[in-house]
Image (cartoon, rainbow, N blue to C red):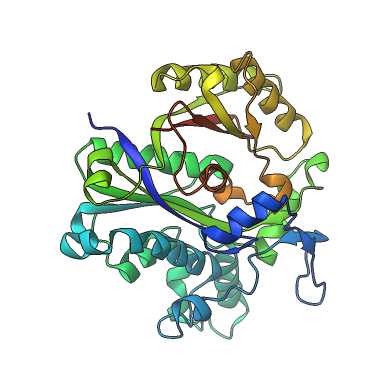
Length: 361
C-alpha cells in the first residue's frame, strides 16, 4: 500500500486567514485571545479568540454568500486554500477527489435561529427558506464541494475535539478503499452566541476559564508518488492515527499512553524521534492526564511542545485539525525532515482519546 502524505494545507485561525499568520503568531508566541465587545456578544465568556475581520463576502465574494453562515464560510475558504495546489488535477478528474470535513453540530446558530423563527413567527412556515440548508450538519462539506467543484465522496464527521483526527482517519480509509485518488480533509468551527452558551452550560466549573476560539484547517492527503510527480513537497507522511475509549476520571492517562505507543509502533517511530508534540491541553485534570500520558509513552524524549489552545482558545471541533496545522507551521516550508516525527493528541471528556503520528521524509 502506498504511503499517504500531507502535501498541502490551509489554515484559518485567530491569527488571521492563511498559513502565514499562523506561522507568524506561533513563532512570536503571541496570544490571540482578546476581550469581547459586550455590546455585540452577549455571552458568559469575557474573552475569545476570533478570526479577525472575517466575512464570507470579503473572502468568497458577495455572489452566493448572502445566506451563508460563518462555519460554512470558514470551511469553504479553507478548502479553497488547498484547492489551489491541485487545481489542474481537480479540473481534469473532479470525481477522483474526496472531501472529509469535520464539524461540531454544523452551525448551532443557524439551527437555533431557524427553530426560533418557526416558533415566534405569525405562522410556523414564515421562515426564510434560503437559510434552511444551514441547519443540516453537512452544509459546510456540501457547500465546499459545490463551490470548488469537488465531485468525489463527500463526508461530514463530528466527534468533539477529536474531530480533526477522526476526519484524517476517515480520509485514509476512503483512499485505501479505492474510493478516490486524493482527499481534502480537515475541520471547521465558528464562534457564535449560541455556541458560547451551550459550551458554558456543558462544561465543568474548572473548565469555564478557557475562552472559546474558532477557525478551520484543511489538508491535502495523497500518495507520496503522486505528490512527487506533481512537484509537491511531502510535508509529512501520515504514520498512524489511533483512538481508544476510557471510563471514569482515572482512565485517560492509561488509554492515551497505550494509544500513543500503538501509533508509534505502527508508524515505525521511536519515542526519541518525536520532535514536536501538539496536545489538546486546556488546563484542568484531563489536560494533566493527557500530558502525563504522553510523557509515559515517550521515555527519554525531549520534544518541543506546541500548546496551541493556550494561544487560540478552545476551538472545539477544529481543535485537533488546527493542532496538525500548528505542527506543519512550526516545521517550516519543507515540512518534517528525515528522522523527525510529530505527535498530535487529544482527550475528550466523553470517554475517548486519540492521536496521530506524522513522519518526516
